[in-house]
Length: 222
Length: 222
Image (cartoon, rainbow over all chains, first blue to last red; front, side, top):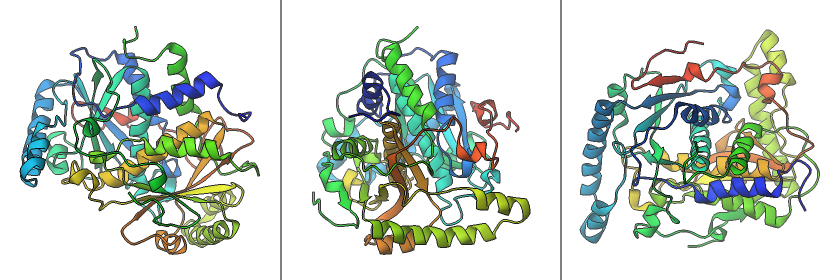
């Protein structure tokens, strides 16, 4: 049974397909810039995400300049080196073998910022939960990520970097909060499983283990 | 030109349709419980969202019990009353006229939590940006929101409540962070525009006003 407001079967399947086949992509980016109209569609998808109080706090910097990307990669490398030091033995080796970014391979990157203190929306919905401003920006990212998958565009989220250094490099004013740095581009393919699963970093949890009913319970032990 | 890994035209259009037609729904919920298999599909869509270090930190409480929802609505009402006090004049009147939740009308609610300190993922990607754990839970919410739209299911995010009171009510242990409280259900329709836009609370910003290139610039003034 489907409801009157539901999409047709094929359309619904397409939405679930985007959700299932979306990957956090760090390898296989093609050296082909995204067409301007495609990039605009992706940004429009992000911009139409829900936002608390309809404040639309998200700001985007499209980074294509090679020198800027190289400087971002340096910031990544430093943070990644420090991260690697925190692991030992087999885990350190495994960490070293992971490819965790495609900053230079992807012809375009996207820095996502949030104007958390904006007066837009007149504070509606943020009084007890100010973090919902940044959450709005994350909704925008996930919109873009799914739209990108449908366009054959890979997206990789790089969080291994020092936000302060990145913001200085990109001339981000103090009132904006850094949310995410993404690598975007056509790719040679999409892996069937998340990289961190197929390379043995972490195993998948079951759906049952994360659901409770009416009140929290540790029903689903892993 | 579409890329080899892109979806077909109809499938791509369906993904963009879900993004464009998704709404933050607070009214018009039907008194019809969602079928169990549909709810499972929505939660599976959420569970397959990206997560930092593949930590999968998101926990869900499906709230169907009327008394629990009534108690949640009381928590909302208190926070909403306090919020209303912060506005004056015409804005206060406009705030009072807004319908901001559908906790009792929607036969099922969903509390979304994040196990931010979980060892899963071995800290990968969280060293310099611990907030990415909660961001992973927001990606899960947006997946569910779009899947729900394709199923004809409305979703409304309620952030006007005291997280501490809510967590106490729902027996949420201290190590979990409250991320969101959602109302879910079949609806009589989806509005063409966001409620806060059509009822004059806030106007939409243009896409151009939120994009910079290579470095941040105030290019797009509103």
